[in-house]
Structures are given as C-alpha cells and as structure tokens.
Length: 118
Image (spheres, rainbow, N blue to C red):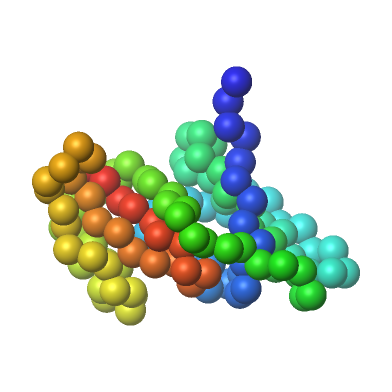
C-alpha cells in the first residue's frame, strides 16, 4: 500500500502554497475552483509526495496538536534554514542530537510543525 496524499483544510491557500513551494520544493500539479472555494494538489518532482490543500469558507480547518510533517531536504540544511529566515519564518536551530537525523523545524501558516532533515 502507498500513501496517496495528505489533505489539509487551510486558512489561506496562497500562504500555504508559498510555504510548501518555497521550502518543501513542491509544485502545483492541479487546481480546482469549485464555487465553495479552492483545491490545489502539490507534489515533488517525482510525484511521490503529494499534499492536497483545500480552502473553503465555513469548513473546519486543520488542527495541529501533535502533528509533524517531515521532508527530506534536497539541499543543505543550513541553506534551507537560511531561506526560511529570509522568507520571514522562524525556524528552530538545526538539531544534531537524538535518534532523529540532523533536522530543523518551522511552523507553516496553519500552525503545523514541518521538519526538514538531511
């Protein structure tokens, strides 16, 4: 079995798109604009990682308690972390200790902890 995609009911689709395009390197593969709002599918270059972002008015938005999305960085972590700072985000320091690989965390526009590791 393969995970097809993860759906996030976001508060502002354009801010979420910017975050996942700029930092996670995802690109838009499909956009649907029904009357109720906007739906955008994002994927990595190989189409292996997919997110579905949905912004509909009056619909419950994503809750973030205990949720972390993790991406394997394709560039040096130091460069990616600096890019996050330049874009106005507040990433954690790069962590090297522990059972996890070298990584840092940044909060997306909906409050989801997003981890980038090497």
